[in-house]
Length: 465
Image (tube, rainbow, N blue to C red; front, top):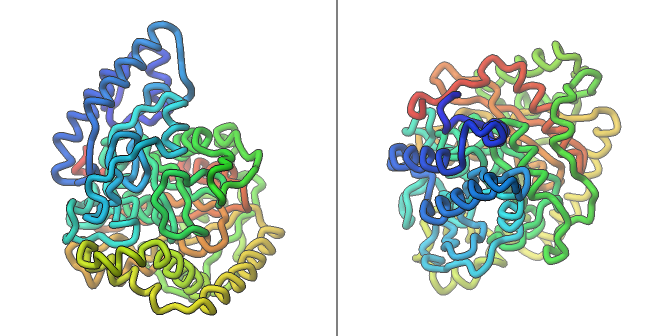
């Protein structure tokens, strides 16, 4: 058996069934690894070994008695620290909320526990999922396992860093302008922004009411599908939740791409915002790999990338100002400097700006839906560059905005980001696959097919080896 920390959730479940691994053995190994690597990676804000080990012992006893709670029985999961876990603080990586202990589990954490998952603790994020990676906060920012001098993407930074570093096999993140897919891109893992409304956000601190998503993060597409199967579903207590029958995401994972029509949104990275040569070359290789598997790939055109990005900024800043205005007026010094500057943007937007952005939003949603009449899935860039050095703030700021993730927070379509290779400097490049609304299983199916073909699959960061 490979090192325990590199086992996928699927492999862990199989090992439990074969009685070659126990939850206590796995949890002990993972927390030993956390103690060894997290002083460098800073993936955790608060590990919870006592509760996790107790849950592992209970899971082991249930297995011995022939009982199983569900598909994640005894599987460890890390939780981004804007998502409530009963009895643990939800700090949002901010001084504003230090000491704020969650009274109840968020809907998604309750779903995880119901399926047998074990919560390992709370993970680093950017402050309130918008401010970072910065150093004037109560906790240090997470770092990239491929090279700790570089950032791991955000805002679900601890989720990405911990997965790539082998600290846990599954994690939850959130995505408002790309915050699941950015760390997936930077850390070389798999991150899905589900269809808007597919996963409940109850018990998750909001950033933008109409663009927030909770999404699964994993090291394989199959594991992401397993996690999505558990957390997806209608929640009447979340006003944005969709009453949909979309499910069975794992059942589609092995169907391959033969016969699928894939639209390559090349203009996003060749014309609208020119990607680095490493990123561009990797995208062409992805197209070649999928073509070899039987997909039919052709170029398609969406509205210009800057249109989507402008809509995302206006809507996000207007809605985040509505959430943070009171604290910004009464406790501005308790925010990190970068967070404060970003959130203050919303104070200068008018009601007319917001209304016009929402009106234009409907038009671009219709434009994307029209393209899906001609193709099954879209393929495009995620990050236009590999991650910058974390202490080079001007370069971090420049490269963070060079991305094509925000369009699908605006439109709500499901989008998965994953590794597409390694640059000569040894940092991950990335690709996105996007599908029609509630076709989350389809985009994970494409991701899994590409993963099987990829020559880089199975490579690990040197730090985490």
